[in-house]
Image (tube, rainbow, N blue to C red; front, side, top):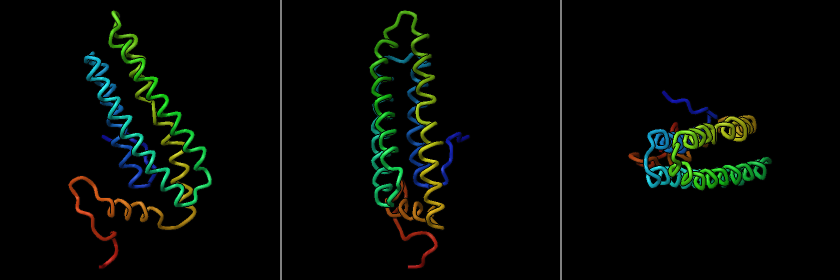
Length: 162
């Protein structure tokens, strides 16, 4: 069951699923009282994926002339700062004698980390795209086809003969 909020922007939604998967993985590792290195690895992967996803979004927004790009970029920076704070708190949570309390707080923060951004900023951008140009979701599908997905061969955009 996929509980990732949909923006109806195929490429963005796929990237959101990957990023949120690693947020969930980091939370699982914390709940299972995994060693610091295991938890830190999950947060490091999450941070890497988030940076890559944010860069992709920002590039697309600049290309499309999105008027809300500056506020969106600022929110990306805040999300990355929050991940850095979570990573810094991780050592204390993993080394805590009581263990469960600090870990539980980190799990709650990780679980909700990016959802408001997806539902607000990303949803707003996707809506702007749909209102601006009918067929904008095809642009996202075309972008995905050109970039290719793991296990897929890039090909012509769907719906075109070539």
